[in-house]
Structures are given as C-alpha cells and as structure tokens.
Length: 172
Image (tube, rainbow, N blue to C red; front, side, top):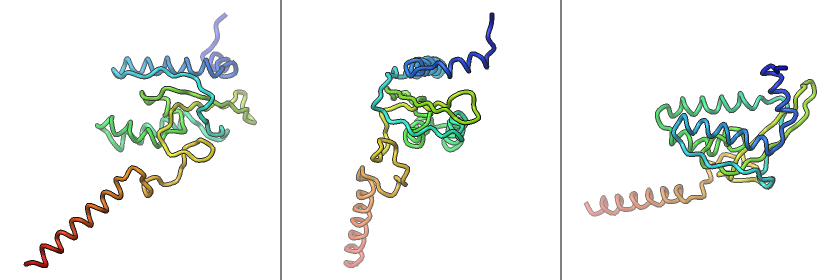
C-alpha cells in the first residue's frame, strides 16, 4: 500500500511531535547547508523558547517565503545583510529556523475551524530582538530607541564637529 504525498503530509502534521519537528528542521537545515556550503548549528527542542499564539488565518509558509523574497530584493548581492535583517524581522516566524546561528526550537499547534489539519508554528532561537513581557519579540519600532549607543555616539560626534567648526570660524 502506498500513500500519496498529501496523505503523508496530513499524517505527518497530525502525528508530529515537537521532537519530530525539531529533527525535521535539522534535516532541512542540513540539506540547505550542503547546498549553500553553510554550517548550521544543530537545533535542540526547548520549552523555554516562547512561540507566538498560532493564528488560524495566517499562512506561515507564505509569510516566510514573502520575507525571504523581500530580503533578497532589498539586498540582492549581500547575503550577510539579508541574514542580519532576518535576525530581527523574522524572529517570530519559521524564517528564524533558517538562520545558521540558531540552536533552539519550539513549536505550537492549534486546531482551526474548517481545517482537517492543525496549524503549526515553529520558531528558533535564541532570539536576537528586544523581548516583551510575554517573552516574544517586541514589535515596536526598534530604530528609534537604539540601546547599543550608536545613536548617542552619532549625536555626540555631530555636536563635536559643530563646536569645532564654530571655534575655527570665530577665529577667522
């Protein structure tokens, strides 16, 4: 007896455990690593990694594809920039599991009305974003409140240059 691809996918989704999903993601990461000549860390299942609530109306595979396409269009020849931005924009999506540095994985499932299969969402960590009180990535605009000091260093440098210009121009 042979099963069709859709029957195998349905069985896999219905019977999948978090450990099976972690192993499946490791296999995918290994395959990508061999094709792209990239070393991926092995993912370990952890319950401490927070996963957002699964939304039945979202198509997580399409969302991930869309994010990848946007990053490739934004940085067509700079894979390093693509990866850096993916670290923040994709932290609460499956895209996080395609980042080589990630070492943890956790998944959630939800039965959705009108669907014969539960929806699953897996995210990988540790997360590189600012986290809110729920342990999920804070979706506020991170660009305005940088904590790494680069913003204040820029302001200090600008003030210093203006002061030097003012002093030099006042002598001549």
